[in-house]
Image (tube, rainbow, N blue to C red; front, side):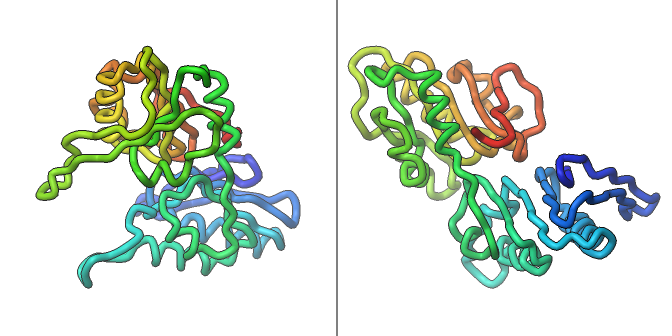
Length: 264
């Protein structure tokens, strides 16, 4: 979905599938918001060119909280297509004055994008921790090393983190070990990470935390794919509540609560 200065861009399709787009600008600066649903880079290009040519927009911002293709941040051989690199090159070719993203999955994407600014999530995490946890007995949990590096130290509450066990033949997660100071008495947990697909990492984390005495387990992910509704995590009964933003999630489930658009 695209919005220009908070107004949804109206897009129709001709019988052959080509887009018919209606969009306007009010001032000589404008923000295009792209909430990713599918590959729509050409629509983004059309909208940006239109605003500059027809409305003389001089300062054009792209608000793209979720960076598509961020998982494909490296290739192992010549047959693999480096989609993140080529996607970022395309975005750069439009010459946005500012590109605003949120909680990028890979630092490679941040280095490949021009004029990029990362919107902080620290305020959101602190508010959730204050709302959900007792710092005297509860913990924050990072399910892997990557999340530990990104989020440890945001709140003044004890942290623990997970080390995944994998079947290296299939790549599947088979279990998870927990490191850190685990409270002796029953405790609540706020798990934090940047992205969820089917939620298998969080499922293994929740199972292990329950074994270690966790009572209520809450989960915050900045970017939640709709595929989470098809995974076992949502049906497991292990998660008390899941929090996310509208960056890519557009589903509807009583267990999932949407946090404000500004992630604060």
